Structures are given as structure tokens and as C-alpha cells.
Length: 413
Ligand code: PLP
Image 1 (cartoon, rainbow, N blue to C red):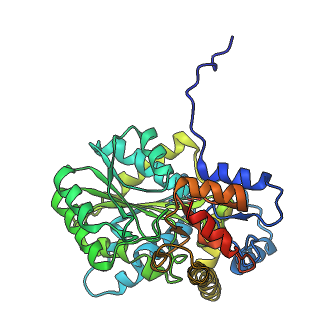
Image 2: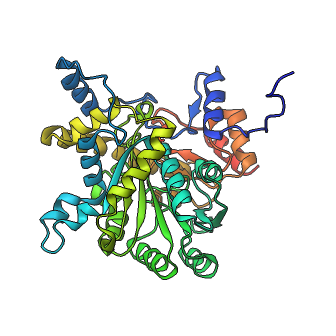
Image 3: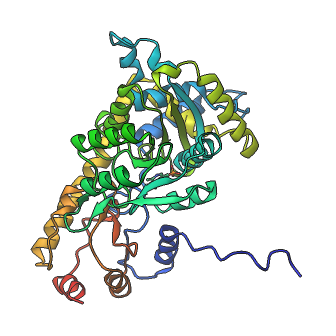
């Protein structure tokens, strides 16, 4: 007999399952559009040039402390630079009105990448704020469901995506939150490059979301997995968070990942930032002690290697400039793939309107295929996508050309 015979059936994680099927497929012209990782024109991984430079600089120096424990909070210089990237604290400090208070409102802790930041943030809020519900976008990154289920907070969805327009469903989202949300509910927001749809709110729409958060007393939870990766510009991709921050009175959290914008996927580099209101300046010691307590009981502290790379790059003017170039390389390739895909669909006379491919931003697009079309394309043409029709644009290759009959045949199924 075993204690483990009656374990619950856990659904498989789709992107990883699709990736495993792709790896198993012996077809020479297979294409993987399932997993959210950057790929070159040849379909290969791309270690950022600046990361290779930083690694050389780090390993060049003999340092007997290299493998010592970090503090529970993590690498503090990394955290200072990471927070500055999100909130632009240095320029806020140079500004006329709020020299000290910007820093005093942010508590940061190193995490096991963006997933770990989401998880720690969920645990922190659940234990200390007792939210009635968490509002997550429909659809969203599937792990949001798992994370908030594990935290034990009832999940509700807001109607994020309008499949007819291929855009963010602003009116209905606001209407839903106005009518059904309650004070202290959490509102999960993708800061930029919404996964899986690639449809983001406009700046004006962000103002509307901010108003409803204030009106209803919601706690925004920004998931920031693509800063700089989406548009190539960290300020532009971080705009919504900076806008909420500047508002002063609103408290929120940010789960920051360096997986995509530094290509450090397996290194697990991230941070959680808790923003308290201007009136609560000085709460940061207690917030930090609470976060450290959760981390200590879970895994003691985040790993140090990847954070060291990010710290080295962000803390050095020359390397930072090179990082911006690398961001430009990645975001430009993704944008050019959007155009290439769109043009190819049109040139092949594929039935339907494909304009949303150009309008959406970031790693992913919801192409608008049905589940049966997705499976037909996988079976017959060895192109791997998620069943929702989400594709990772960066998996597209110039060398791949579908035949006209392929796109027509499948889309008319
Ligand atoms: N949040 C979103 C929306 C994502 O798309 C991802 C990665 O795909 C993450 C968070 C976290 O990724 P990681 O844990 O690799 O930083």
C-alpha cells in the first residue's frame, strides 16, 4: 500500500506539454510556436550579447565570496536597480516635489523569477489583507489560475479580450469591476504585452482602470514579465506602473521578471515590489520583515547568479546601453515577424481578417484559430500552437513558408 495512490489528477501544463510533443516530432520542418521564449531567425535560442559580456566580467575576477549565501531579502544593489527600472526612482528623486518619499514607498525583495514574485505576492496579500476575491483577466497566463488557487483566494474573471475586435475589452471590464468587485479585492493586470492575447490597454484606458481601482478600493497586482521586450523601450512598457505610482494614494504590488528581457529564463531572476501609499511611508520595515518571513520558511533566499548578471548590466553605463541594443534586436525581430506573418496570410489569400496580428504587441498573438484548426495544423503540418490559438511570434522563421493550399485547406475546415 502507498500513501500516494489517491493523489488528485493534476492537469498537464499546456505550453510545456506542447513543447514536449514538438521535441518528440521527428519531422524535419516542424515549427514550435507554443512556448514563450525568444528565438532567432533560425529558430535558435539567443543568449544576449550583453549577458555574455557581464558573465565574462564576473568570472574574470577571483571572488571567494561568489557562492556565499545572500541575505533573505536578496542582492540589495540588484533590487535597487530593479526597482529603479520599474518606477524610475532616480528621476523621481531628482524631481522637485517628492525627493525622499518615492524610495520610502517601495519595498523590494528578490524572488525566484516572475513566477516566484507572483506566488510570493499572492501569499503576502492573502495572509495580510484577506482579499475577498482576486480578479484575473479572461484569458490570462494560465499560471495565474494555479497561483491564486494555491493561495486559496476565490478567483473571478473580468472580460479582458474582445475576439471580434482583437482588442482589450475596456467598457465591459470597467462595467464588471464597477458592478461586482469589492474593497480589498485584488486586480491582476499585465503591465504590458498581455499574455496570451498581445492586446494592451491604451494610456487613456489605463487611466480608466486606475480610476476604478481608486473608486472601488481594489489592490492592483501588476505582472511585469516583458518590460523592454515588448516595445524595446523600458519606459514605454513600464508606463502604466509608473502612472499608478505617481498617483501616490494607491497601494499595489509588482511581480517583475528578468526571464524574457535578459534571456535568463532558467536562471530564475525576479523581484517583488510592494508599494505603500505616500501616507504610509515608513511601513516598509514591517512589509520587508513580513516578506522575509515568508521567504525564509519557503526557500531561505533566491539564487544569486542571475541577479549578479542583471546587477552588473544595469549598474554599468556601457553595458546598459548594450542591453538596450539587445532589447531592440529582440523586439524588432518580433515586430518584423508580425508583419511577415500578416503579409504571408494576406498573400496566400487566407480567409479572414488578420489585422489584429499587427495591432497586438509582445511575444504572443491570438491568431483566432479554433481548437480543431490548431490540431489539424499540428497533425498535418507539424506547426505547434496552444489550443487557444495563441502563438509565440518569436517562434516564426523567415525560412518557413506554408503553401497556399495549406492555409486555405485548414482555415476552411
Ligand atoms: N507572467 C507572465 C504573464 C508570463 O508570461 C510569464 C512567463 O511566461 C511570467 C509571469 C513568469 O515567467 P518567469 O517565472 O520565467 O519569470
